Length: 116
Image 1 (tube, one colour):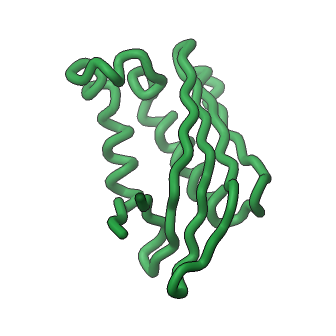
Image 2: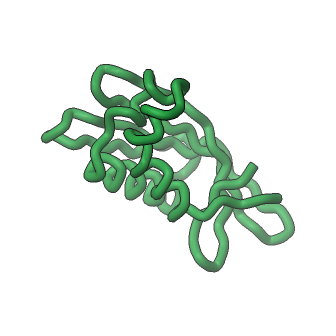
């Protein structure tokens, strides 16, 4: 199972506005409209939802300055070979655009990592 460090995911999101200019598929997504502060709030919410929320319980974030917002809801939790993994639904809105996605993250000694 390949895992993507959460820090790399954060870096990718932070670069999203610039990437959106180069990759048309991101142009019409909230990623093209978020600020660094939005990304910080989004990732903090994501990590806290994975760590603290029972399955089915939602955590929300809002940047009152930019109006961007989102939620993270763990859907289910599994343990495979001693590794805890969770599917989490993430919804984000920024600049009038919205996006919903489901990710799988697994807990490692160094923190949560996105997995496929």
